[in-house]
Length: 58
Image 1 (tube, rainbow, N blue to C red):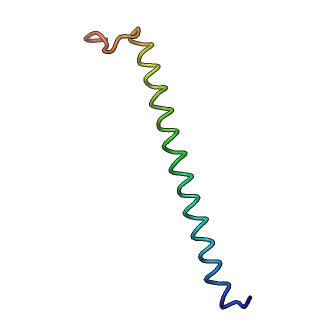
Image 2: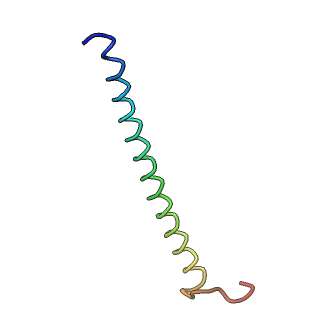
Image 3: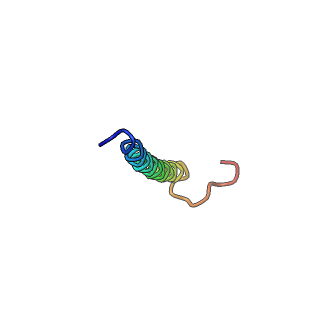
């Protein structure tokens, strides 16, 4: 292939890879956020002795 044809091909491939990387990063961030949220819930539940709400001033 000539250089004239390679540039659009390479640009298209780079675009596909960049989009895939962004999707992966977004998915990983969402999963980490969900995991941290669940961990926080467990900690709060433990600290509140499985009560939905803490007693006033606790």
